[in-house]
Each structure stands twice: as structure tokens, then as C-alpha cells.
Image (spheres, rainbow, N blue to C red):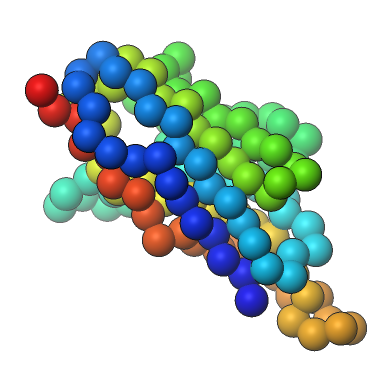
Length: 124
């Protein structure tokens, strides 16, 4: 009923840039916080950045100043601009959304939804 689809990952050289996108679709009533997380090989998933529906942002210390999260509420889409990439940024990046959706014509439910992930590889 609700789907998050990421795009924009790939192979990039150190110092390069990427822009990740994540579009939410389905019978969505409202999306509250959206965010990006990442999971490097053999490591736990970690927070990268979050953004509220009003545009307030929060970043992990490791990405502050290099990553920029934004969203387009009309498109139910969140973006992550990644600049000055480092090899240690290599990971699968996951989109997350805290949302409400219509489970039928009368009932709304809450959901913490995840995308399938997009791989970012930083290597020369």
C-alpha cells in the first residue's frame, strides 16, 4: 500500500558528488519525518540525516557540512545531496519515512516505512 523507492546511487571517485532521491507512493495521507540511513559492510545501520515536514534538519556529525537533506512535500520525495565523498561513505543508503496512510476508505494507519536501499561506492 505504501512504497519508498530510492535512486541515484552509483560509483563515484573520492571528492565527487551524488544526489539520492526517494519517492513515496501509495495511499498516503501524510508524511511526517523523512530521513536517510546507511549501512556499510559488516556495520550496523546508522542515521545520516532527517528532515521534518516543516523543513527542520538533523545530521550525523560524520556528514555535517558535506551532506544536505531536502524534501518536496508535493511530490512526497526526499533528497540527499552528497558532496566531498570519502571512501568511508561507501554504504547502502536507505530512505525512511514516518507516515500515515489509508488502509481502507475509512481507516488511517501509521507506518515507519523503509526503501530497498541504493548502493553508493566511493573508490578511485
